[in-house]
Length: 97
Image (cartoon, rainbow, N blue to C red):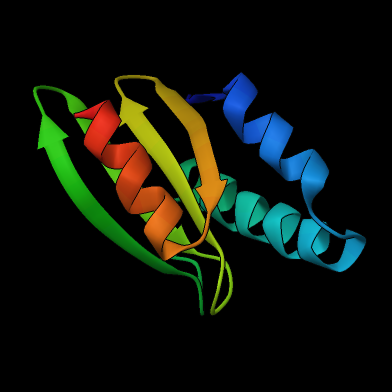
C-alpha cells in the first residue's frame, strides 16, 4: 500500500490558489490516489512520466490548461512535490534533477 506525502512547497503554493483552482487540484489528487489504490487509470487527467532515476519516477499531471502538479513515486511512497504552470514546473525540475 502506498503512502502519500506533501512537500512544504506544494502546500504553500496550494494555499495561494483560488477556491475553484483548489477544487481542481483536490480532484486531481483524488484521481492520482485512486490510480495507486485501485490500479485504474484516471479518466481525463493527463499524466506524463518526466524522468526516472533509479527506483524514483517523476510525473507531471495536467490539472488544467494552466496548472500542473508534479509528484514523485519511489517504492511505497508518492510525494506531491510542486504545483505551478508549465514554465514554473520546468524551472523547478531543473533544480530538482
